[in-house]
Length: 335
Ligand code: NCD
Image (cartoon, rainbow, N blue to C red; front, top):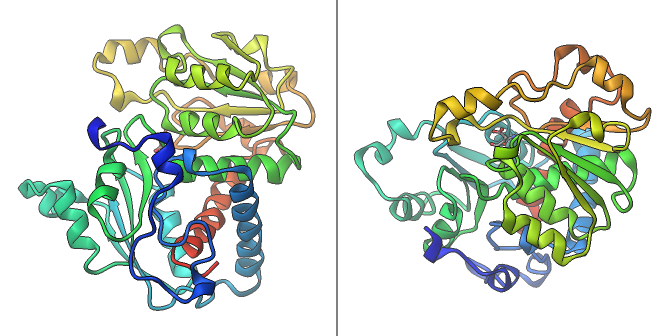
């Protein structure tokens, strides 16, 4: 799907889709736009999204839901398994008063009959105002966006990007630690196939941070991302030893080894239990720091760590809904 992908320049200037709305609805940078990559965001955009997410949180705590997106319909199209991304988009839409068409089991849809992605999205946009898409191929969201007249939101394209996860991750760091600039941030685990760490690293390049990329040698951060880090002169260290860095870090972002991306399962078996964050390791970490994980976890963080106040991963999951509410409101022009 490479040929259909957008350049960084194109991503920053994606056209608005759909029919123009009254002026006040078209003011938002994201109104009517696809959300395909973190390359679309600048710091001002993030400040804006975070502010709206905070408002969404206050609103949910107070009222549970509102009617901001009443009359709007979201199609949730998932070609890969999902719990959080899928459910949080649905919850986000419903709490804003909108409706959802959930297509989580594509094996029971016409995809199983051989329908192409362009035809599927051009069908769903006849019913919906926005399409959230997760797909196993890098660039799938870009392909969908080329064909669709309604906005596409990338909910993960293979090992490519997961922009909405990166937004909620960054929001969580800011919410928990009060800043992003100056932090020491370690990403641990499968940095090769983990799309969340690809998107998060790129987004963090808008700030001044110090990176620690901690992975088994065969799961290192891709060179294309390292090049981007070097181009901004942000310091980074690569290591396979979590003990080297645990005392230093403000954020420990742990990831699952992405079993489904391995061609050779014996390679997966060799690295799957490489890191386990347990209470013993946490004793060496700073008092003020956080542990994050996009989830699902499959053994990388022991359950005993859950009661540690530094374990931020369930708060991170909650934040996902507020960030997605903010995004849906912005894209549909009602933020
Ligand atoms: C992640 C994903 O799908 O990339 N999950 C998520 O969206 N929260 C991480 C993973 O699957 O390991």
